[in-house]
Length: 62
Image 1 (cartoon, rainbow, N blue to C red):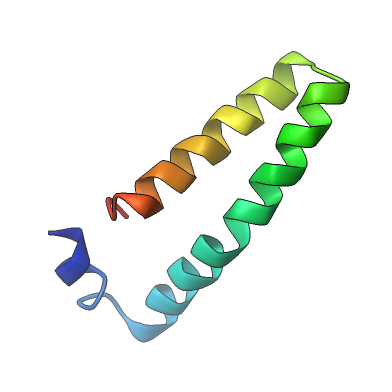
Image 2: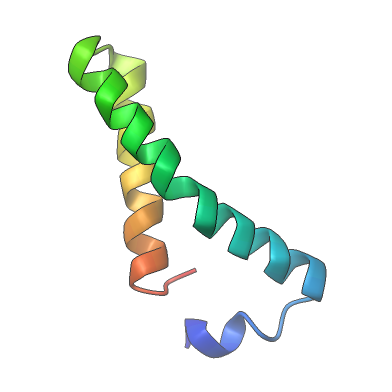
């Protein structure tokens, strides 16, 4: 369903989704490295959100 939904939204929103999809993996890797060295509660929460986004994009839920 999501595969077809992406093409029903306006072009500017679709472009924003593609930019976020491209940028979230490098940010997640950086956050993972940062969390390994200095783990705080906020870092773990941010990492969990980023991992959720990567999984959602991989499974094409978004």
